[in-house]
Image (cartoon, rainbow, N blue to C red; front, side, top):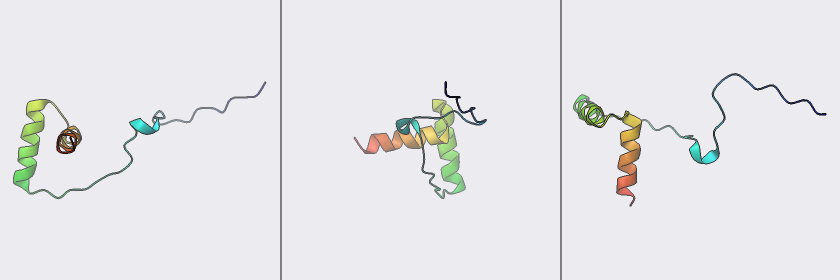
Length: 60
């Protein structure tokens, strides 16, 4: 019987459709960050969730 490879420590593996592989840096003014944070606080979202939502909205 073949031995199984021991699992490595760290984050669990995610399937391709679940991975977020690209990071994007966006420069915002302090006022824009303030507006983004206020929006996120009102929705209970993270900044990344808000950006992903906006991208979905503009690509309909």
